[in-house]
Structure formats: C-alpha cells, structure tokens
Image (cartoon, rainbow, N blue to C red):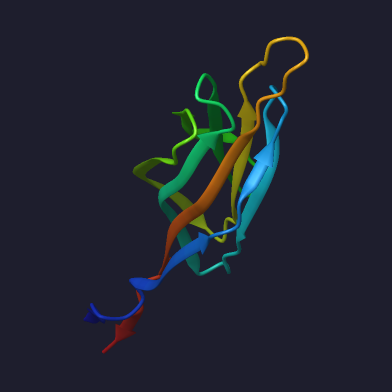
Length: 146
C-alpha cells in the first residue's frame, strides 16, 4: 500500500514580480519593452496566473496599446492580453486567467507597447508602468511506499 503525502509536492512557490519602471515608445508599431523568464526543473510545473500594467498616452486624444504574450519552452508565442489606455491619466489593465505549462517547461512573458499614429509633424508617446506578472510553481507529488 502506498501513501501520498498530501502536504508535499503540490504548491512550491508563488511569484509576484512587480516592475515599477516606466517604459515608453513613440512607435505606432508594437515594440518589445519587457521580457520575464521563469525557469522550471524537470519536477516543476509553472502556471501563469495574471498580468497587469498601467498605461497612458502623451496626449488626451491618443491611446497607449499593450500586447502581452506567453511562451512555453520552445513553443509558439501566444497572446495573453491586448489592452489600451486612453488619454494622459494612468489606466490599469490586466487579465487573470490561469495557463498551466508542462513539467520542466520554461515560461516567457513578453510585454509589447505601441502608441497611436499621430498626425503629420506630431508624435504620440505610449507609457507603461507597474508591470506585474504572477506565476505559481508546482512540484510533483511525492509517493511514499509503505
């Protein structure tokens, strides 16, 4: 008869990575501004829980746009969040939906930022701050023979 240790090998760690830096771009095409990497050993499984950020533009008439993607190991980059913040006041955006990866898969989260297209002779700037990524790590259950 085997016994399963219910309190071992389940949740290993909850990471809450907050970056208070301010990122900006005047480009009207998405530009990679931040990359977060989370490594996992063969006995660890990662779960992306949520992503948040604050956005604003340099102009009341313009918006800042954010695209956040995730990638498991060498797999394709997948969209997690697309959001926009209108005007010069900071707008909080985010998504809270779990994405569970396989054992040993590295998780990469990328933040892309872009500004609205400005009239000729002008430039709009998009700003992002307080980028937050929440990730949970799980270990394999330990089976104790006995």
